Image 1: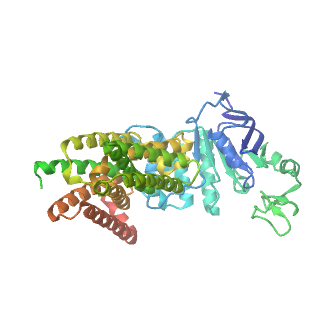
Image 2 (image 1 turned 90 degrees about the vertical axis):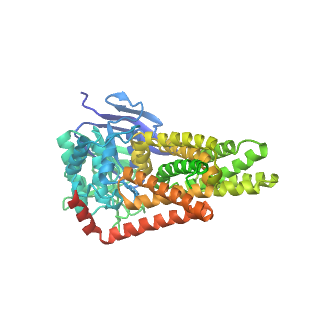
Image 3 (image 1 turned 45 degrees about the vertical axis):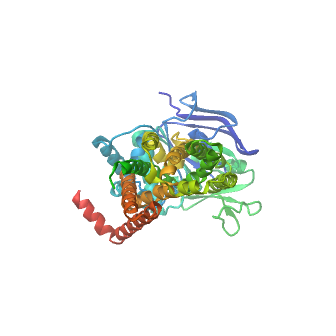
Length: 272
Length: 275
């Protein structure tokens, strides 16, 4: 088995004349936990869509097991940021997880005891067993995340991609999801890549960081990437990396700061 | 009421209810109820056109409902889907108005296409309805899981390789197929209420998708059968009874889910202890 699962080689994406990603190269290996970090609008979602095979690249190549990706395959699981599903939708948590096995297949499948047990086990693994029979739309955002992780994992992917799973969660919800993912990555050897605008909740579990800013990506170990030099080069302006009380703050000078970042302090903008 | 003259009416009504119950479930789940309104009502223009040309109205209905489905799916790529639906719908209605104005004796036929003519139906008309109905139900059963995933969780479905636009197109075409054969029987307006009322009531009654479809079909059947019987006895129009019974089921479903929400935990605990 190859030690590299997914590789992006000098990937560039242009959408409607705008350059969204430029010269992105990164490699993902089995069992690795990667944080895809960067401010809003930096290109994280586009990068995730490239990895999923939903976004064609303008330049460069996407390789799976060293082979060019032909089309979508079952090796990649995906958890979206938000479901946007109505509370009264007739779909139980266990139905959603079961659709993770064969929801893309045509034809009829009759319910079976084996399937039910498989779904129950998966729900237990993500800590969602107790609301197995609830309607998916009635759950909170954090509960829905757990269900969608179970939906993705039951298809036995080798790579799990999650789009901003920690947005809209409180601190205990964040820790719950992060620890579930870290445990699964180690136990099952699944590569996990998770996008977030704040790297701090991921610090204890991240093996590698892919820091996105201005359509470019810096990849490596956190201590090598999250430095004043590397990030200043990526942002194309001077930013300071400050470590306080075990937290990392990326702070831009007041001039030329991006008003989108609502983590802005009084005199400086915290960008990541 | 069960004479041989009425037998065809019962058969046709049954076929229409099954089709409406199954397609209606997905129309409500996908939020395509506006398309479920636009396709049958817009297709009525096709029947008017067919009458002008001296063709079987079924041909006009089939062509126009398929064109409506293609129009909605095509325009949805560029515009919001409700706007795309509205544009397609007004275009079809406009053409229909022109056809009706050219025709001299169309008013009576227009009335029956809007409100149906379930009592005058002949055996030769029942067969195509049954066949096409079986085809559209079979297509939906075959596509059940991808359609369910794509309707409820479109982004997840796309990531799993279920293309949302293609699913939308196939579903709208099935709805068009269902429409073109049911409109002459129950009428365009009633087809709309039969697709929405039972499906909306069913989803308040159960959280299980398979059971919700089954309930949707059962409620549609009860609605149609009760409406045929009541209309036969009273001589009041079928449409009146379909509308009233459909609304009553929907309200009962709402009352049920409201009551369930109120007694919420007690009810769920009771249900759990029964298992």
